Image: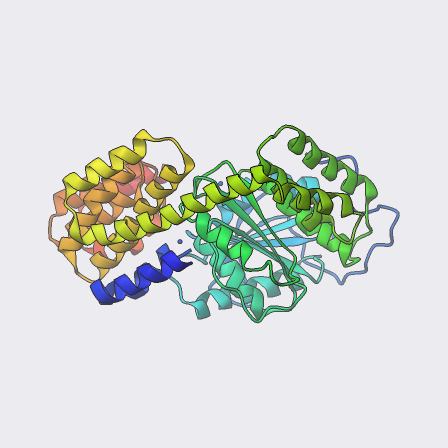
Length: 468
């Protein structure tokens, strides 16, 4: 977190008018089984009559009863019925992509018999009060409209991860928080709340996620961080499967569902197979720690705990750990340099620096490229909104060099051109954004900077094309 704090100090001096918008986005900012994990012979908890929704199908938008201004995507597993209770996860995507994330993990919901709810309203740029209102409404919806257990799990990615962590304190019903790609200090939480993180090794927030996880080591909080081979994105379903297991094991631990020795043994064996395939002492230590974190209190993990201590005491581990810490420290220094360079370096300097990073294929270089992209997104967005157009133009040029396939860059450029009265360039940039994957018609229609283009026939053609 030290690097983030240094960045904040710089922004206070250099860009006071942009500070609030930038901090939010840069700081630490897609089968059913034969055996039911819940013992089918166990008594089924009684539930009151609930609403009937179609099962086995993603419902993209359901209006909240408690707050009709809000909607959520829903997936009920194929075996859902109102005669028994089910675990539930509420998802927060940074772009209000509730439908997207529910679709991404719907087959896991069928495998583990989970209810999935995705907010269609929580997104980057909202205040804490606004996201807390959304989270509170969704928790109420799950508890009153569906046959769900009393304890709820929250999951989020990037800005959505911060929402999940922050919202966990508003209800004692929240037992598990799954955070992916970002973190923020979580306080005033019940001691029973557990934390499972996912950090892509190519994610620009990797070092912040590692630091956040380590901050819990001095406490008795149940926590673990899964490192996976990915970038700044929702983990793929193969990786995210462990989030469902984490929640399931927590339910066994607090006796919400019966302990299943077969499920425990199956999962533990899968981790042992991963251990056998790696000679990396850092990976070996993490896998032993994962068994301890996931299964402590459910089965004997003393062998794994002792093996972990043996690994971390070895010279091979100490050397590898020192190398890792050195790399992360170097990244922190580079991030500070890049923030300063957005103000002080010309495009030739940036072209050379970005080409150098792209020529390397190590995770550290990929994380730094991701950081440059996110920094440019944040600074250019804020500078356009604050009418610092020269800074916006300079930053967008760097953004295009660092992340040319990102649709946000031409979208923000369109906003800049529209402010400058360059309608032809604005329409052209929007067309480029659509080619790169922009498919949210409402994003264009709601953007204040683009209102002057709404009557342009070319805009109407573009919007119609997006709807097809």
